[in-house]
Image (cartoon, rainbow, N blue to C red; front, side):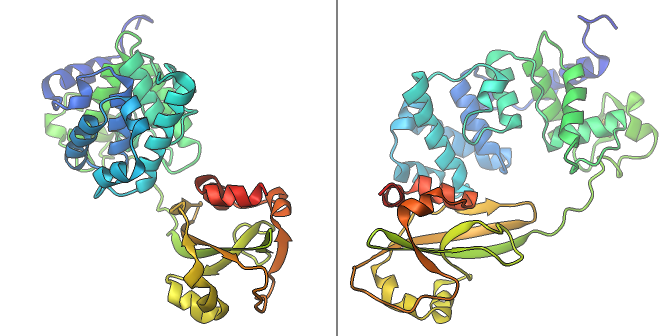
Length: 357
Ligand code: SF4
């Protein structure tokens, strides 16, 4: 095969796509903003579910400037029902960033797109190829499945090195002449034909497919069972008095050993937390709810957090809970903290002001 020729696999996929592609609005545009919007909506969301949200959001905010200028309440109301609100928050943050620092222009390369908040390798490759024609292959669950089956790749797709290996295979296959079409084609093929229960009799690749020829369809892609994720609920109460904060250092054999954090109770509900620490019943009536980072994902745990701020009058006293101490907020600023708390501080101006004195 000459360098300029497309791989037969790519040619077959593209010609299948021409006849079978669904007509979706984000495929009719090269506007990076609309492509980005659609990709964020479609994360963890099926096309049928995401489609009405794409119409609503693109109508309400037709440009990145409209989205940047939107108030968060309106955006969240329109996002309602789609879940994973951090996506909406990141959309808003990124739109503002693009307007404030790049005059609303999207970066036009994969590498630069990756720097945007909430944009991972898949979304960056999608925007770079669909909007700017860069030959950057998209690799998601559909692509893992199609490549593993067709080429007989036995690598465990949950293994850390898998993405690199599959991306470099896709990089060899993607035609420089039409990368966007190849990316669309392989995703559509994985969604409609080479699905978890594939329709091999209709498949144009059947005669050369490794999995079909070797009866390995059910074995590929290889995916070891992920360890069950433990879900934990942290209730943070940021307690401030006269420029000091009530904090503790995490010692126990647990996550974030040695890092510092605000007063924290691990509990699914606040009343249980108050039962464990009765002094909370006296101070919580003065608490202001904070913007919480929501779900924070660690390798085998998900931390669901909620947070409040209580600013106590100077003369108010109570018995300090075990292992907690008062520390000047400017000193706390210097101590190592979990990313979850850094996000909490970034998202709440009141906290930033306290820490900056
Ligand atoms: S023959 Fe079946 S398993 Fe192989 S690529 Fe086609 S649909 Fe997928």
